[in-house]
Image (cartoon, rainbow, N blue to C red; front, side):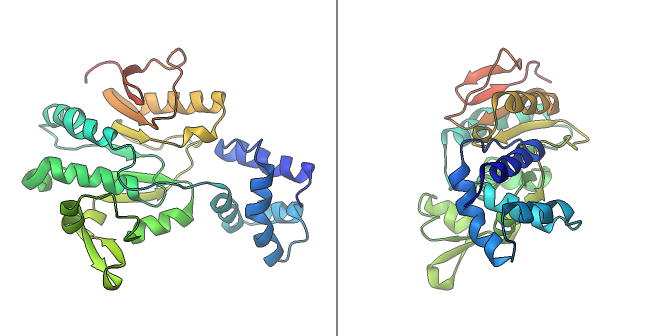
Length: 272
């Protein structure tokens, strides 16, 4: 069983490096790491953390992050966001970016890929035959290499696909394994760029984003970390750009000057 001192070391490390607040999750941390530590031949959690810090390849740190991050997502989650994206955001962007035809859209908590593929499907639907004339690629990042590997494979069970409309299923997925699984078609896969990225790091974007989806990730951060992240997000958006957060999440508008469009949808001032 993890000791208080070991738990404090691990939770402190995750907070400092990734902004993730595990302060009330001692039992979860113990449960998710115990078997891996035992099978790796470490005698206790401290020995494992020594290995994390000494491992120049970063492999053990990746394992730690993969075990301690929760990645629960599904197709069509909070679909009202995609309705708004298609009905309000994309018509605005189509006019605004008519000359350059370059859209910059970032999904900052890609998990196993359902959300960025949803964004790509909405873009394909909206632009239709004009899609090839636009750069509609979606940047999708996550700190967990494990879920990104699943996302890039783009294979989902029939159960995971149950909420997707039939026409989308036919258009964007191939049925495999005798119909028990579906794989994202290559032309849609090509529309999503998956990268490993820690939200606590400086944002590397050369140009500002038009839309940022940062849904259901800030629940893991304390208020100070959340506000620091939101300030970076605000600075990374084009004037008039949109931010989508989870429908159960909140944003302190006293701290960051976002305009509220509707609960969980925000806009940077200015129209670009």
